[in-house]
Length: 267
Image 1 (cartoon, helix red, strand yellow):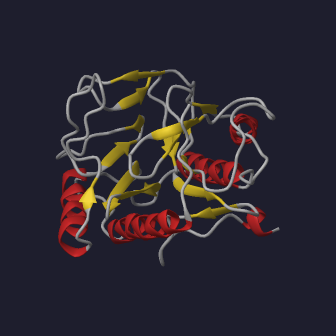
Image 2: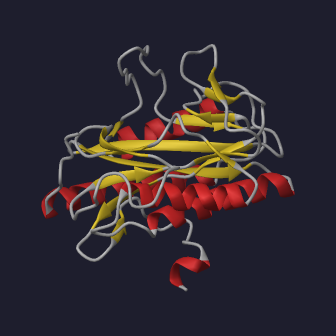
């Protein structure tokens, strides 16, 4: 495993990319309403990133080994889609939940963040899944500090989500990030405390738990990208990019409209 530690100048560049990423999500938030298509959201995001931010949408034409190039500028995963949903022309309807995953490249550095949106009113069950997943991400973030281990992050996310009656997707994880979209280390959202890579200042990675209302089993859909729950239960995901600091952590993907941390973060 080759983990690239980031210098203070690198981290400052990633703060910029992270803020731009979060600002795309701020912009999209006001458009997520019944009747809009995820294609329209993708077009809004693409135009904002390219023309307003003078940056690059990292997902567009991204092609890891074994995959065909991703055709859109953001990922939009609706209801039972876990991740990597390709935006399409189906209008969102009242009660849908959608994860919008945005990655911006600015001056060669990546910012990566995703948020859940409830379309219209939403059911109590859908709101609870989205809230618990958000809290699970923050439980993981709070474990980040020098001397901790990656397993500490995964363990707290897993135990929190499972105690709420949900399951954790295991096939996809957080990842190191910097001048590359995906770097070492892999950040699992399950595991045992005290195991895994030791955290040291300058490490930058995402924490992005995918939590299912039903079983954790998933499958790939026919488009070659979107991942769905096998039992068609709802799935939620939140994501931030984090840097390990000398004293703890800093969230890099923040902007004026970023949802505030849960109350327990400040308790």
